[in-house]
Length: 305
Image (cartoon, rainbow, N blue to C red; front, top):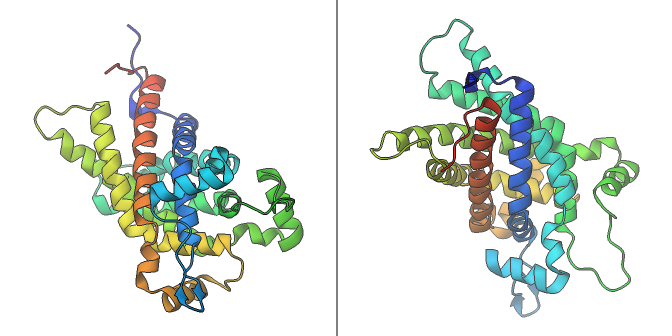
């Protein structure tokens, strides 16, 4: 039997490609929930003469059903091209850089279990570095998802992801591709730390329970835990990020935060919480489950449950 390649010996290129593949697969499977989340977050209270009008989108399933009914099933995958661009770059980098950065922080001579705060710091750094590069793809994805059904004969703002990149640069300037970078760095750094650290901790805790092994079921439970923890922490930042990227009327992050708080109240920052958890929870399950299996294939340790 051929010698097994230890997981710790996977090269950066290999782990980058494994992570990018897992992230892209998870994105394709769960983007309808993300589209629903973005629509809910961008939805504001509107006032008529008699009072507050009823919101167009209501809840995760209601939003998915409304989009599919009014715009067609394919509309749920709006922004998928830009989403795959984002996940290939961001997903590959944030996980691919995690181990090297963690080792750098503790030093090459470190022996023993790496402290939790060092893991969190490493994930914060890799999440921030990765999204600085991937922000244009995130912006285009949100712009495409935010566009609802248009009247007959009225063309959309963008013909597709590539057209969106060029149109934004031509009309708004190159720097516009990094609109919302501040809240996006905060969101992705925090969520990355929450996901990676909590996944490790939940998985380690589950493996200490008699009868549990490093199996697909364990990866599913750990992925759900990572998704829930990430949403609880990152939801307010996610709302601000989506609004800044979907609406260019905000001057900056603080302006968006203050206007949202003033006009809609504190609970607006948790608008779309359930679809956000539905999206991020399922995304983490699919991503970590796929990543664990792909890594085992690369290292020759693949198993069948």
